[in-house]
Length: 154
Ligand code: ZN
Image (cartoon, rainbow, N blue to C red; front, side, top):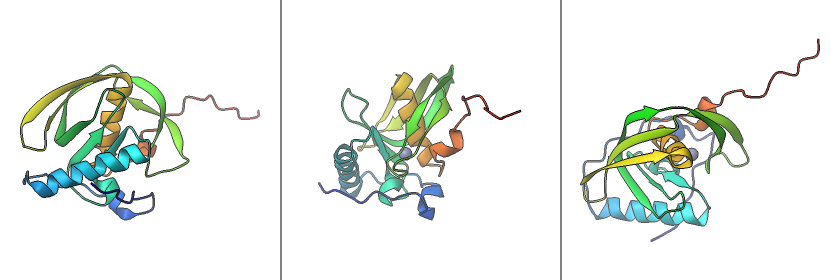
């Protein structure tokens, strides 16, 4: 395993759409291992492949109950709504309140190509949506909602 550099805001790769993974080989396994190591070293809850400069539809996440890997993820159901504070390892020092579904159902392949269905709520749902957005070149700053009333002077 090896630490990889995290791509930071301003790099145009972050705005690109990642490609479907069609080879479930050693190279993919190494990428996923490196992504996990890089995520933990930077104390992130999730990390998408594009954030280490690889345009593949894959992300890793650990919201406190162990490492999970998502290859070719697809959100198949969403319910409710939550507005919570969010940040991103690619946008250090920035945060904002985003609007996300409260629960999501997501299907994804593992490193061997087997499909799984995950159900997530709250923080976990937010994390999965955030990482899934990265695969379509969408940053959390596009999801920010203004929850603070305007304090304009009359
Ligand atoms: Zn992010």
